Image (cartoon, rainbow, N blue to C red):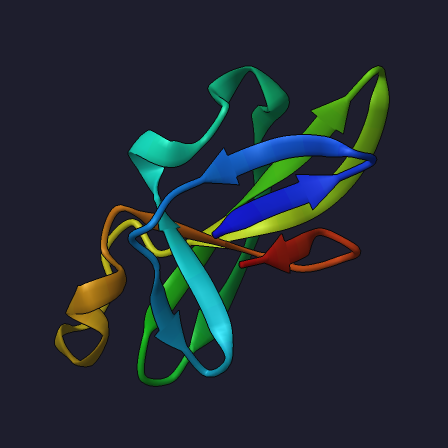
Length: 93
């Protein structure tokens, strides 16, 4: 699987976990130079509190385009240390 934004590969792996139709990529698969921490958070009743990354490619910012659960609830333990995408990021097989 590959995550792309603006024709740039953000992450690539053969090991994703699918939850609610979202592919969660291992942290180790991310091109870390393209991500910066965001202060944005949201809460899911069964997964816990999500934190976000902004995606930055060639000076263009896609705010809060990637999310992860630093301390997922036990029902979502399989997505610990994994990141998912939205806001125009394409996930392709």
